[in-house]
Length: 93
Length: 120
Length: 160
Picture 1 (tube, chains in turn red, orange, cyan):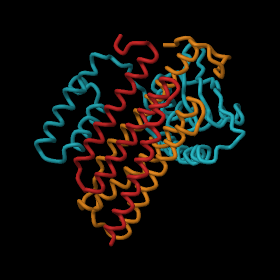
Picture 2 (cartoon, one colour):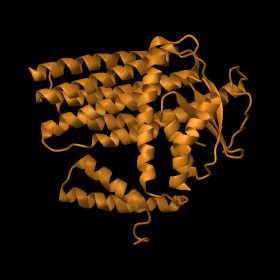
Picture 3 (cartoon, rainbow over the protein chains, first blue to last red):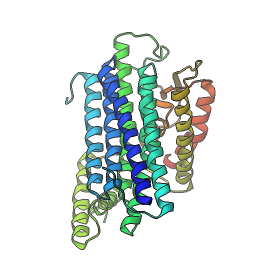
Picture 4 (cartoon, rainbow over the protein chains, first blue to last red):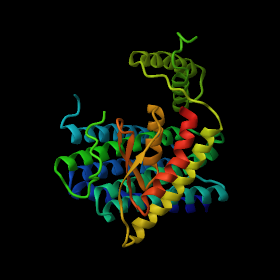
């Protein structure tokens, strides 16, 4: 009974997070300027990481936790590189 | 994929509330990306998911794993620390890039009083 | 001891991260200690300016204030996004600051940006002025007063 309740709630949370990823993707695809697109990508990364964490809770495996950590890392590095590119026109000086 | 760990009732309710609440806060933040009109306003919306949404889901995950494994599981703190340290950095960098681009194109609605050109 | 472990806090943090990621077994504790010792030495070539941090109650109070502020401003920004008040005015403000230590300024930047509703944009090191973007600006002087009273005073206590 408890497991069923929790399964329903977590599935609902995953749907909500999926909608959030949709919003971020909308801003990434539409965004009038380049910085809007990068902001959308950053939000997409963050929300994807949270979605992976909910999968981890659902299956009870810590495998997803490590994937989430890697996504957080890559999202940070990617956004910093893109931000630097927007400012200077090149990534590595 | 409908499955979940079997937790005691109180824990199931708390974990469920935390996870669903965090997801809803994140959705509100992402919705702000669509709703708000200017870039500088949208940056504030991202912070919502990166602080409260992330904290709620990580707390839920910590509680769930601590109960199923029968010992305190705290490695989610690593993600929390990492995200709280890095998200502001990326947002500040993006804001600076945006203000630099807007200045070079002489767009309106910019701070006209200060022109700190390249303070680094 | 100083020469063997030049940055004890960094080494400790690396060791804690290693054990949290791999679990507690004697082999991993040994390996983690080794990694912490070697990797923290790589900071030597960067020669960072040593931070002067006073550990004390000021840190705990700052953390508490920031936590409360993050929760409060999350609710405020969530309301703005959902209900979209018609007379919202967002603008940049300038905050003259007395902080000089780069570490204190970095912490202030993290705090201001992590609270939804305010965003650190730029720090002018010559004029000691910080440019901040506020989502819901009512009174500029009130914001400046709030930031100075709540964060800057405590940061001065910790870092300077």
